[in-house]
Image 1 (cartoon, rainbow, N blue to C red):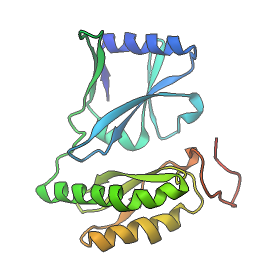
Image 2: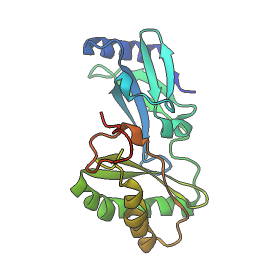
Image 3: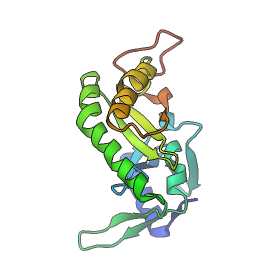
Length: 202
C-alpha cells in the first residue's frame, strides 16, 4: 500500500481541479526499478488509460493509479508534499524501488541497460518504439516493457525474440529468460497493426 500525506492529497486535488477534468487520476509508475538509477514518475491519467491490472486508490476528490508492473516495487512507498523556497514539490520515498540485489544482479542490470540504450533502442526508434528494463530477477531473468510503437504492436513477439532477446544474449550470455511485461492493450501508435481482431489502439 502507498501512503499519501494530507498535504500531498490536497496538492493533487488542486492540480486535477486546475485541469478541469474531474474524472482524471494521477498515475505513479516505477522507472528502471531494481537498478541504481531507479526513480518514480507521476503523470495525469484519463479513465480509459486505467487497466484492470492497475491498482486504484480512491481519495476524497481524486484517485491514485498504481501502474500494474510497478506495484511490487512501490509497496510501502510514501508520497509527501515538501514545502520549499519555490513553493513546494512532491517527494516519493519507495524503499523497495531499487530492490535488494546482489553485486551480480547490479552488474547485470547495468549491462542490460547499456545494451538497451546503445544498441536496441536506436534500432526500435525507426519504428517509433522503445523498450525499458523492468527488472533483473535473482535468477537473472530479464523483464522488459515496450513503449511507443512497440506497445500494442502485432509484431512485438517477433521483435522480442528475434531482435531484443537475440541482441541481449549475444552481449550478455549469462542472462536467463527474457520476458515481456507490457500492457499491450493500451499502445500509443503501433507501427504495425495486428490483423487478428480489432485494434486496441486509442
